[in-house]
Image 1 (cartoon, chains in turn purple, green):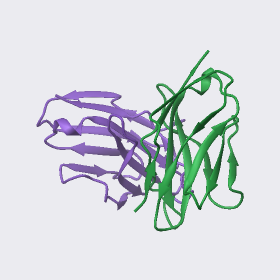
Image 2 (cartoon, one colour; image 1 turned 90 degrees about the horizontal axis):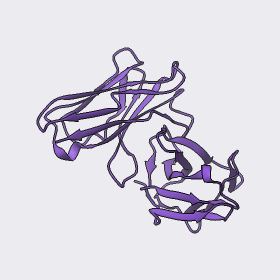
Image 3 (tube, one colour; image 1 turned 180 degrees about the vertical axis):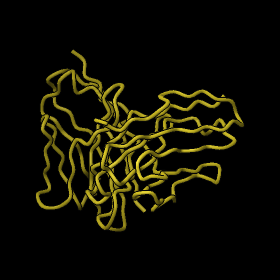
Length: 115
Length: 114
């Protein structure tokens, strides 16, 4: 596609439910990143994929959060047993190879609201 | 670890006035510096970056930023703003030694009014 696509754009769920957020990066981009942006804060790093593998998952807050990228393209961020504190905008970004320091292409985000 | 401070959460300014958005960073290693912009209902996009060389970097739409190592700052400036510059601006850093895991500031909302 022309840009990074994220679905759904909005998700409202109840505390304790399971949620999946999808990211479709720019075609040919091998590096993919997930960030989380809470209200009034800047984006916070969650996880970085190089190809199919998670090269750095140090930003995942706890084991309720998990992400996959099985074919090296689309990625899914999975959140189990959601909590109200998980409410945020989840941003996905991609870059050609992960080495063009700083030049990430972001999607518009998935806004998650946990009631 | 790195951190970024953007002290101004919101900067109101009139059209055609100059503006400066402040960014200070903290890091124990050398870093690359960036400004990203988020226009309403759009994703973040790179505005400009400092990697090496000249400490003054410019964007295609008239913004500039100057890397000041002694003051650990990377302030963003524009001599004359337009209504269309209304957006949220994020300063970010990454160590100059590997892949691009950016650390962002909290952002500054630039509000340009007629």
